[in-house]
Length: 431
Image (cartoon, rainbow, N blue to C red; front, side, top):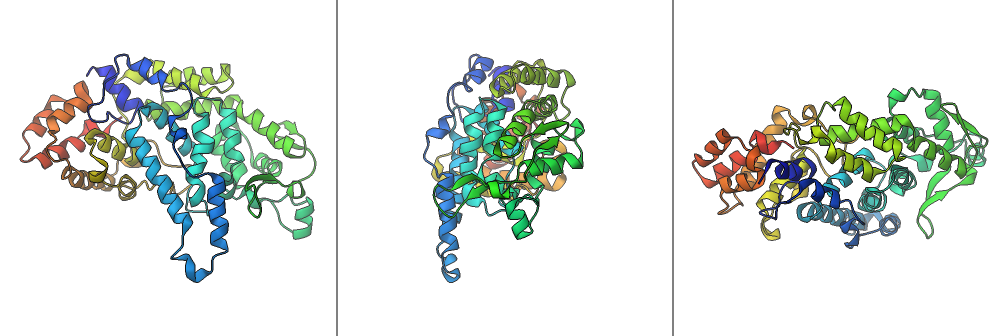
């Protein structure tokens, strides 16, 4: 394995799966993964309509029966299992990494909003179709999806001077407006104010959901929309749903949005402290293509900085998936990836805040977190059977592995200890 192949598999992918074929041309291999639709979309899965129907059914189930009949729990578990299986078996790991980068960028969490039954559908319907498309289309899909509208409570936001607001004495919920400006698009560096957040919340009033009759999903409610034109950061937008569409279109292609997205992409794939020149190049592509995410991803793999030594610490999700891909155990011997992520501090779709999971060594490099990894790796190593740790190290990391680490692995007292040393080595922890 040459250096570029190892870096492509680890920095941009999910780690080598067993002894799968190595890419002869790593950059071409990465680029080809962005062509066509996402292969995972061809797999069966629940839809938002299925999830919302289950939610409605549960609401009409007597309380004493709910602990025995819980379709929402079953849907979430099935979606989580499918997501783990896709990450473990995919032949397009760069694309899969991008899917979960954008899913974390547009975080939703089962901690609030009764959204567990539609989180899997959220990724399939808002993220996967747009990873190689335009940011504007992904942003639209996210902002109109019931998962996001319920998670950040925009479905309950009512214009104070709307028909519903005057009748029910209800008002704005600014959560979605605030997080969308701060986390998803412009970032605070753009200089927006609290007044802009409030005005944006007024623009988004009426963006709600329909649960009581089919088709379940997004619904614009005119009676809840704040009347009149609104001004956001000096730009005036008309009343009605059209005003929200116009505002999203303007925000999606704003220079500060391009810079924010470029910074996050470079931080994720290159370095915790994003090199300014690398950010500038990706930002320029987003600007010149009006938010073409495929073009931005292709620029990432062309960055000279992207082929420097690996320095980032794998998050718990990345670590668990890379370990299980490296071992490539049969499904009946494979540890539960979902449970492992819980144990290592990154439970699936359970980020504590709307800014999602951290993406730097500072977020995941604490002593307790690393000790959890050692404990988990020791347990997993017991399942590795006759797999030789030194051979696996060479197959998985090749020239990225230090000679001193390989010597320690070869000198271990048992196969289990040798495998634990490999899986907890500094080299294996990096991406």
